[in-house]
Image (cartoon, rainbow, N blue to C red; front, side, top):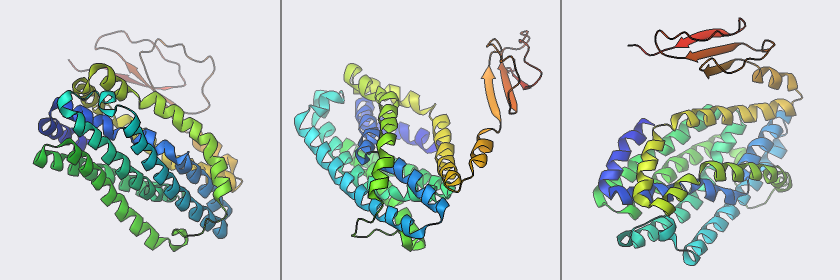
Length: 334
């Protein structure tokens, strides 16, 4: 987050407001391009964790081999589909590019499509690590990838002032970080190295990925279309203003996603090991609520500890809270 806050002014200064808007919109394509995996990443997380919980190494290897080949196939599909989209649709208009930047917008789109297709395959290692209860390690590599892409993208933009080169730097940073992660992980886990054989896990992977794809499509439409709407309707210069503001409030979502990614495989493994009690207990820990105090409270105490932050102003008469919650008054200093 701090790197993004430092790199963003450099990008805006080097590319201009409209140029940064194009850059930000193009690099936000990742959520939609990842749909080309057809839910494979999420399906792998679920299936691999379950097989790990069952302790069946042969099944784990079969799932891994199938995942690598399916990921490679989906990456080729994404690259070809993205290139065809750039030939059929007016990409610069969709990005809100001014006339002087239409060529840069189109080239940037194509660079990101091809580059991300490669990065998408390397990102599979993060899913393997999360499924093997090494979510913290996967999160660190993901953070390193984000830092590398932001730093290299900002450096390329500063040196060249070119939107395509800034996008190339961003993709190259991801490639370098995830490539290092892949080499290290496969050296540690030879059982999960890719193979030319499909393995026997493709059917179960595709079944698990199918319904998860619906969730991914819904999330992409709900949370990743805003920048495209702003670019197409208001122009790339307004998209830049919108994106800079959005970055300031992105930390909470990143933290939530990191925690959910680590919990998901742990729950799947516990269910595979026939331990639903662990899942229930892990979900029923502590609830933290921020409120103005005027929201109606349940008539019966919650079955888990509840910490309530009551928001207000100094000297205001803050409303009461139930006896069964731990109350924290959040008021600004004068």
